[in-house]
Length: 83
Image (tube, rainbow, N blue to C red; front, side):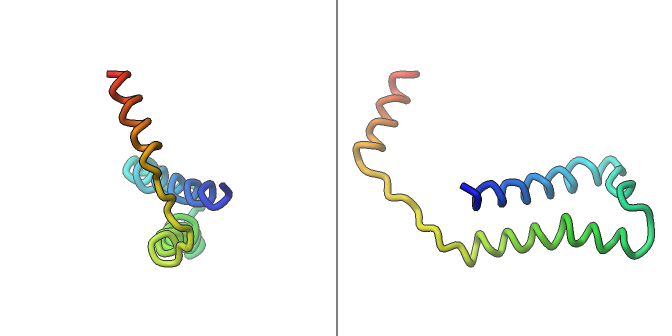
């Protein structure tokens, strides 16, 4: 649960910054100016995103759950009843 929560927070933080704040021109008003601004932007919204993506894609040791036939059949039945 903690693993999923941490990755969702990292990805949502990066999506909100790069997709909403930067195109509107409000992404730079948090830190002022100078070298600290670039370091903060890279560390908060660049490096963490790349580290999380690398961890999920290459270092993930969580195995996928095997779906039983009855579980899949139940979902098909439920979808059929709802439509």
